[in-house]
Image (cartoon, rainbow, N blue to C red; front, top):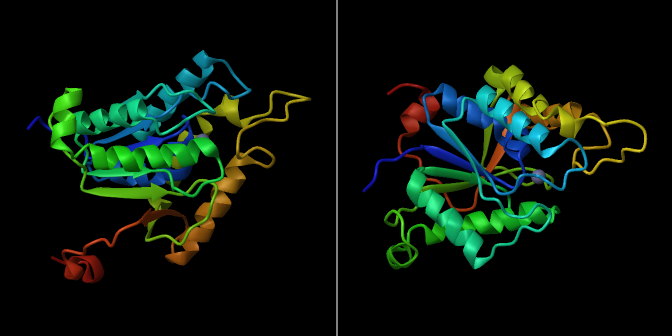
Length: 244
Ligand SMILES: [Zn+2]
């Protein structure tokens, strides 16, 4: 079996989705010593603001702030993401190559079609990555399925399985999100914007959500995550009493 390159892979539809919805969780994992990567499904080329070069430079800046080990792009068409056979096999191959234990993707119920399709794509690829015969037919590394698949929250609310305490990394999450300045700021009069957070101050909305979920865990800021299957708890003593 080839060596694992990553411990955690976050799969997001557009550059900035991972930062906005899971940036704090990524930073906590990186601070704990995990090797974390982000795979963007598209380059966000349908965004009305900024050039492609702007967007690439912004993603590079955010990557640095997050301390990612790896960042890649599945090069699917922005605004037209679909869980096609080719797309899911390409993603499954990334999973086999990178070997993360944990994958964090979009929630399956999201009003943005690209988010919903990316969630479906991630769920299907996660399963396919463990099929030995498919790995043989499509080539590349042998079959290996990440142990856990979790979902982050974009548009649609859900009742989380966990809320990650992101207070310790709050300022850096802000820096990572604000790296996408060309997408988040109006370019002037007549710019109606197509970013899903447009219409009010982007950072204010991220903060409101983080405060609301932080309140649920009696912390200042939190990020919600969902597991669709029951999650095992190996050591309740460490988890609740804080000692091994
Ligand atoms: Zn998005």
